[in-house]
Amino acid sequence: MTDLHVLRVFCGPDGGAGNLLGVVRDGAAVAAAQDRQAVAAALGFSETVFVDDAAEGRVDIYTPSIRLLFAGHPLVGTGWLLRQEGLAVETLRPAAGEVPFRQDEEFSWIRARAEWAAGRRTHRYGSAAEVDALPAPPEGTGWLYAWAWADEAEARVRARAFPRRGDGIVEDEATGAAALVLTQELARGLDIRQGVGSQLVTRPQSDGTIEVGGRVALDSVRPL
Image (cartoon, rainbow, N blue to C red):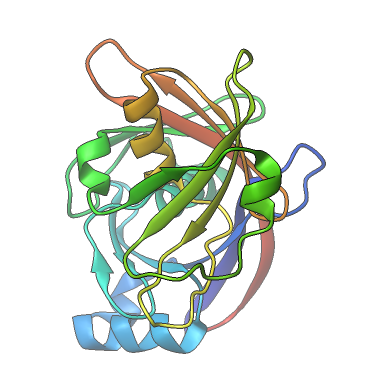
């Protein structure tokens, strides 16, 4: 029997909200890809992470229906958890490649490339109220990141995310990968309020990568 850590990633300023993330700390306990996919489907979180080598930061990421080469909130959350356990993790290694990780007093940060999040389409709406009023999910197919300026001068964004994969994830509460895409498109750092109350902060870097960071909290630990 191994434990499942459930985290809330990209919590709001009040410590609430955040996107639930399952982390299987002992990835060897669920070694086969088909078994990992089955676990992720049974848990029903937007993503579940299997840690294959904590010291090296090697991780494997699954939604309820597919394996992902890269995803934002799973890496931010897993980096935070490994640091909480006393590991000086500076790089996470999902299938997409090396992802630098750092922790400051309040936020956990990853640095990645927006092209790793290909397939997430953004659509600008006229106001934050229009984004709030969208049904879940909106009509149509394909991954949609709906957004509007809450305050363009201050780079504050209101956003909601709809995977529309047909796997039970109707709306994604906080989505680091989509935040990278939007940041690249707008070419500026953003303060994003997503879902019911999550916060993501992005910072473009001179080498073409983008940092995305936020608060992480432990929700629960339970047997898998």
